Length: 136
Length: 281
Image (tube, rainbow over all chains, first blue to last red):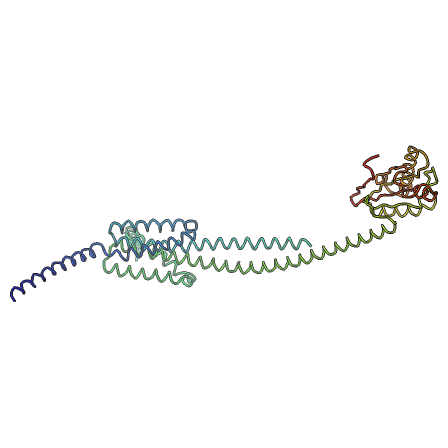
């Protein structure tokens, strides 16, 4: 029996050592760098918004806000690559609000264009009506 | 409070303001305060304003917990951008309202245009109908006048043979009785000033070819002179003599010869173009 006990103790201490190693590594990881998961989610989210507004013509209608969002997103990516997840998350959040502002301004610019197109169309219709009335 | 202490207070405020190491926070507070003054803005973009407010609450908590300036400035930046989004959203909504109004106006104008176009099409069709009717009436009138003249349609065009404008053998003097036919022709030519005439003289086969050629030309010229005397311009009338060529009856009988001593008048088309029997003579 004694022999068996000693063997069991040995096994326990081996397990304990492994657990300790895993725990310290994770704790160190969490404490020093934060988690990469929310950062990557935020970066992906912002990237999607930027892609969408780029297609909607943000570089034309809201160029300064759009390029600011792009450069902040790049900064966020670089910080994330360097393992500075906390700072990266802040940059990604800033990039997101910049992109949101660019989005609203893009739609505003497009509405301006739409308005002038409609007004031009109204004018052309009015001209045509006048021409038709002059035919008489 | 005396003037001196007021000045001190002012300087302290300026000093604190100037030394603030949270410029973004000051900026965000100012723009937020401006924004909430505008009730229309708050009504039009409530979401963005609420989000800005949440950021300010976060900032207050962070300050209490002694967070770093950088973190506070980050949240201030977010708050400031949210206020900017509120302004931009209100502007966008106003523009969309304008677009909607303009579109509604465009629909109305479009309808008016379609109505005007339909009216114009109707008018054009009516005008076209009137024009066609007029052309038909004119054509019918012309046909009537041609039939009055007893002209015949030939491959040279309309040809009027003045059967009664007959000549004594060897003479180019118009006989009496031909007058009425020439008056009718002159009237016709006055009615259709765009049409010209070619007067062709013919003889029977009595006499030499040379004499007959001259005689036929003189017969045509006699008719031309008569038409001029009835007011037709010289420039509208050409004459030709064909001698005994193109006989229309048998020259072996006196009746046949009488028929061959004739004048044919070719009436031009609307453009005044005439077709002669021969290219030239």
